[in-house]
Length: 136
Image (cartoon, rainbow, N blue to C red; front, side, top):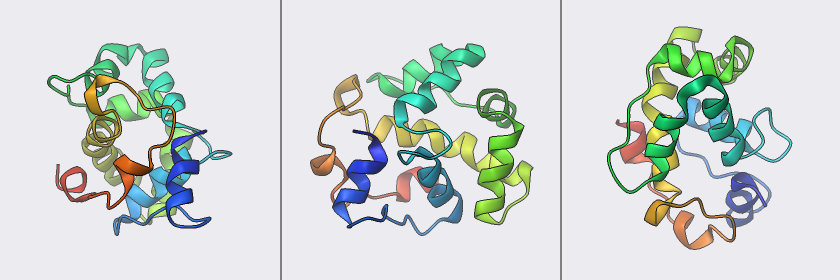
């Protein structure tokens, strides 16, 4: 069961809206059947791009290593960044900058205790506050 399946289960068939078009576009890409497909798929993209150390830091309990906008494009690819940017109504550079600040916080938030939850994320995501992630 993917992150977006659980998120969708909390609000019916739709994923929760963060109020931020970029975060909403990213969450849609993480949805089962979406371009990225899962939180694990997202982390896999960063690991495959040579950014596994950074990705692991977001899951771990310590410091979350930052991403640069170029790291985002390296991991996701220009095509996926463009898809997210289009869905959010942003330029590629705006999307890369926003994703670079959001992704570490999102992964950190959904990996309490230093490990990715693979079961029911309902308790974690109920009343999920996107504010800290969006303001990062």
